[in-house]
Length: 88
Image (cartoon, rainbow, N blue to C red):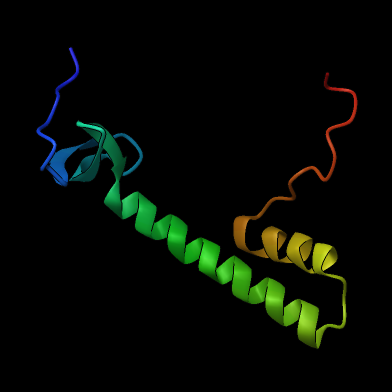
């Protein structure tokens, strides 16, 4: 059974399957939320992605879409599909 927290609870110690250790987790709507360490890593990667995309657009003289695609490939190591035609 999931644990419920009081409305004033901001964070709690819990097991994170991604980190494989006990970490602080955010409490959302009185339930356990995401791991704060994982969230920090995601923020760092997102900031790096935004910075690289901006540099490529400005200094590389390329369109924003192309700059974002190349930055995504460098930071995340993958290219997200640009279109999802035919799925629905």
